[in-house]
Structures are given as C-alpha cells and as structure tokens.
Amino acid sequence: MFKTPLFFCSLALLLTSYTATANTLAEVQKRKYVKCGVSQGLPGFSNPDSKNQWTGIDVDVCRAIAAATLGDAKKVKFIPLSAKERFTALQSKEIDILSRNTTWTLMRDTSLGLDFAGVTYYDGQGFMVRKKSGIKSAKQLNGATICVNQGTTTELNLADYFKANKLKYKMVVFEKSDEVVAAYDAGRCDAYTTDMSGLYAQRLKLKNQNDHIILPEVISKEPLGPVVRHGDNQWGDIVRWTIYAMVEGEELNITRDNIKTMKSSKNPNVKRLIGIDGNLGKNLGLPQNWAFNILSQVGNYGEVFENNLGSKSPLKIKRGLNALWKDGGIMYSMPVR
Image (cartoon, rainbow, N blue to C red):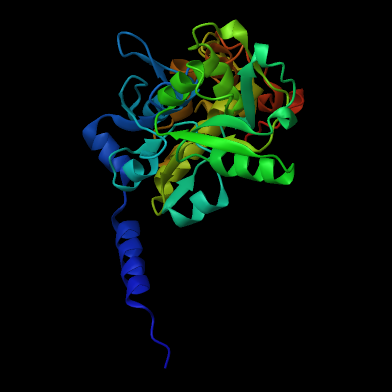
C-alpha cells in the first residue's frame, strides 16, 4: 500500500489551514492600512526621497489598492526589501503585497506559495557599460566582469546568454541594488546587468551618468508585477482587478482631472467601471465606488506610467510594449463587466 510522505502530508495540512483562514482584506480593513513591500530604492518603480516620501509605479499600485479597499490611497506603509528577502517577507505575512519590480516566472509562481496578480511593466534584461570601453554590443563582453544583484532572475539569464553565445565572464554578486551600482561606478565591474528599466533608473545614481551607455540587446523577457500569497483568492482578485481598473481607465480616457465629469457619461463601460451602473465591487468584497476611488486618487495606468517612468519623469522611457493594445503595445485589461 502506498504511503504518503510525512512532509507532503504536513505541507498539505498547512496549505489547507492557510486557505481556510486567509483573509487579507479583513486584516487590512481592521488594521486600516496596507503593508506594501517595495525595493530599497529604484527610481521610477519605488524610491524614497529625503523626507521618506515614496514614488514610483510599484508604489502607485499599492496606493491604488489602498484606495480600492480603504477608500484612501494614503493608507499604505511601505516596507523596503532586498531581492533576497522579498519573498520571505510575503510568505511570513510581514507584508500584504509585494510590489517590487519582480519578474513572473513559472518556478516563482508554483514553488513559493505565492501568486502573481498581473503585469504592470513588460521589461527585459540588458547591459550597461562605460562609453570609453568602446563596446557597442553585448557580444563584445567576452571575458568581462559583470555586476549582478543577488536573488534575481538576472543571474540565470546572464548564464544562459553567455553560454548560448559561447562567451566567458566573471560574475560579481551583491545583495543590495545600491551595492551593485556603487561597485560598477567604482570600476569593479566592466558591465552592469539588470532589467532595462532598472538600467535607466540606476544610471541616474552614477557620478557621471553621461559616461555610460545601455547596450541594444534585450536578452530576456521580464514581466514585472505584484505578488500575493497563494490561497487567498479574494485578495488576489482585488490586486488583479485594481491593475485592470487602471488600464481600463486609460482605455476609456478616464483621468484624475475628468473623472467627476465622467459621472454624466453615456458610455455604459464608463458608467459600469466607476460605479454609476451596477455594482462590480460586490464580488470583490469592495464598495461600489472602488474603481472611482482608484482613478480619482491615483490615476489611470497611462498617467501613472508617464509620471513615474515616461515623459514626465527623469527616465523618459517610451511606452513600447507597455502601450495599450490599441496603440501598438500589449497592455490589455480583461473585460470589466
């Protein structure tokens, strides 16, 4: 007779127990703020200023969740985490949501007891080098010393790329992003590799940013998005549909400035989204005006992108893949109905 190993019995019991008791929404509403895990400082995504005021697209996702669940986008506590400690913090309930430029992969989605709730930025890994090196392509990096952030997908992507192109390299690994940037800036590495958006962001921190170039090759797919604990389906739905509400808001041209006038719109999609008709919030356990609160207090996806990463930010990153599907990108909301 087949006997189930004790480890798997214990794991199944633990997961069953967690699923039965998990109710992050109730905990957030009782606590009256969202605990949001963010980076230790990445401009455009999650970055504190001298007064510890946080900005970035990942930050705005958490503020949107607070607006949806608590009616107030300001009710968020931001907890900075390294790449190495981010998943443990979520698993141990130190945070309610991880919104920290994190790549959605099969292994992360299936082996950590966590779920990815959507994609907020489609990215890819690249390389930065000094202009004076004369390097114009990643294929010229044979024998290079490369700075990498520990506990990220960049390590495996780097190994795969160099193996596929029969190139040699030496990897220098650091736990914290600022340590990686400082090491590269001090000349300890010939190149620095991370997501392309991260390269643009971290270049702002270099002593002489104009002395560095980002190479054209994109060597991986890096879909970045928020992560929640597996088993709490309601909370996962709330995070997922918060993202979709922001994208749908842009599709329907609903902005922070015009949303009040949109209450008189004749468009049934607009009326449904902002809660004039129907009550889509009910199945999420949220009030009828959940999406109205998101769009009026935080803004639609396009506004958040441009303010943090695009034309209104120091990074000036083009929308590219992150443009709406109707504008040549792949950013797409499931039907809000």
